[in-house]
Length: 234
Image 1 (spheres, rainbow, N blue to C red):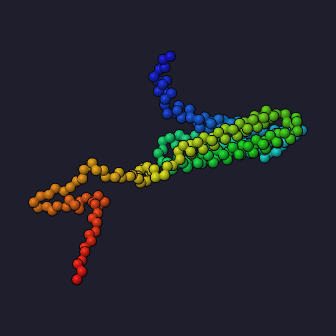
Image 2: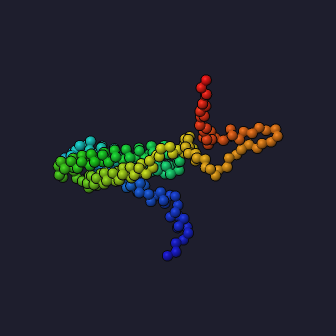
Image 3: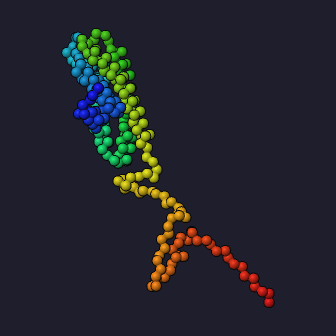
């Protein structure tokens, strides 16, 4: 099957390769799940009871449950957007210090969000379990969707933490390996002088002195053994 060159160039473009990265896909799913959680409870999470016109949270009338889900979902969504932008900038930078700090921050936040969503899932499920049946006319489907995607968020943030840890292991800094762009020092080793390597000796002329013996390295000259002088007895 012949593929047009324009489509091949599009498939090999930097934007498409960025979207195909596992970390980009995981962040996209995490952002979508967070969006579903906070939008579900923000729109249908507050309802009035059958005998009252005042709005209450459908999670056992506990406003803390809806507030937690809405706040966590919104912050997680913004966090995904921010890290997607940093991922795009990471490929253009050559500083090893920035990459290491970014990957460490990515791992810490991913592990933290996995813990937050685990606590949030348990809290939302517990409040929904203790909610009286048929207390609210609407909102039950939105709560179930929020609880379901809160559980999925745990898995996707654990995946992000694992990918960040893999990047930290693969890009671990090597001792004494620094870049000149970072202001480091390049450490090189000098090879020993071989017997076949030429030795530059100064040319002698009528007005020049011969320094052939002193031009050589002191390590290459053979040390002379001390001489013993026997003094005759008087």
